[in-house]
Image (cartoon, rainbow, N blue to C red; front, side, top):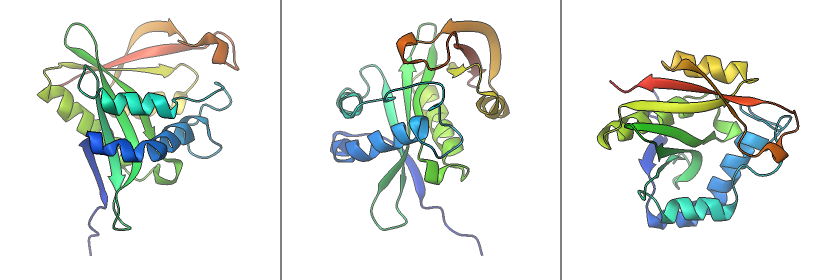
Length: 180
């Protein structure tokens, strides 16, 4: 018997302000916790995003960035289990940012579903290329993005907040994927 998925992805609305604490926990859990394969806790200190950052992203949705949440409704209530933000760039490119999946929902297809939802929304918004920046030391993440069709461009850029780095001189690698 095939089990019906309890995960769905949609663009945030103002009513989603009620999910700020949960979204904040998902983002910081994915990036800074002990659990999950996406943690950067040994590389980067501090919060990945504050509750105020999340609130601003919801309130300013579509101006110009677009935020999507993944929800699990297996308990009968919608619970945020993932986030991704489409960040507009020049030349019809858009970056995937604030991409996070709750450690307890990782390796269950939520990340792939979020990224595919972001690709669909990017195309609807007229973008032709998806961009992502990944810390160069994160071989497992780079491999995952390659499986999704991203290709390294050869561009390395310095970490945006160098004072937060626990490991010096780590850069981001830029990857791109045409949205066809």
